[in-house]
Image (tube, rainbow, N blue to C red; front, top):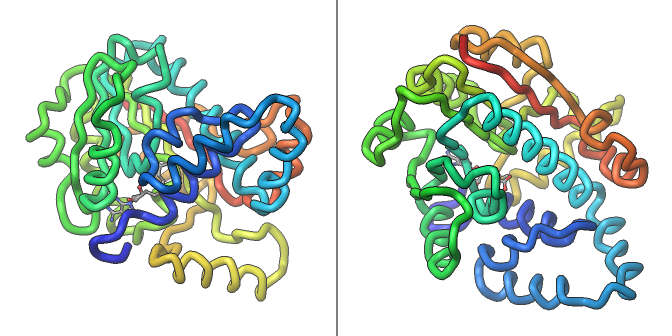
Length: 283
Ligand SMILES: C[S@@+](CC[C@H](N)C(=O)[O-])C[C@H]1O[C@@H](n2cnc3c(N)ncnc32)[C@H](O)[C@@H]1O
């Protein structure tokens, strides 16, 4: 990430969620001002303009539908984790995630949004007038490459004795394996029994078929944004990785499972099928 700059991938994914078929209404409120206002205008288009709304979905190369499916799948897993007893939610690399403001199932939970200091500061400023749906919300500024998540959460009052549900959505592909390892160690240390980890990861082959030029182009695109892709795992490696840290795999899913009967969304999202979601529980 470029110093002093808000994460561009966090901006891109929140914008995409704001442009989805059922848009995330918190995206416009949380994104940096000019973009947030433009998104708000777009979202206020009348219902008859739905056909125009398909245009960005087609033009985004699958990003909007992939994120729509991914975020809703994680929302469902989060609700299940709360039903199973989680009392705290930690969102690692939160970006402009709006769950703390939009999900009623968080009413009895304390939420900690952890992110790089530059992105965290921007979101905090924008979120000032918003009322969280969560019982409490704290912003924790940490650079995973340099600081310990464990110390930062301890400082901000995270209670490691009650079950925590961790969301690590769209972050591990940007981290070198060592940073993922260090963060998993901190997660394990702060996870009471029955805690859950909802982690997305990217499989090594991004484009899913033998297309080395396209693969190189996609990787180059992320590097231009200042956020090169540095971490990839197979499903087996991801399960082993969390197991090493005391988490038992519950479900590993991809776009097919997330989409269910949403056929159009599934087909539009295909270019980004390299990302998967692993749900695991601490033993
Ligand atoms: C693709 S965005 C995902 C944001 C959010 N999880 C979402 O889905 O909307 C990646 C996030 O990881 C964070 N991130 C990347 N590298 C980081 C690092 N070294 N330390 C802390 N956060 C980091 C960025 O600030 C950004 O918010």
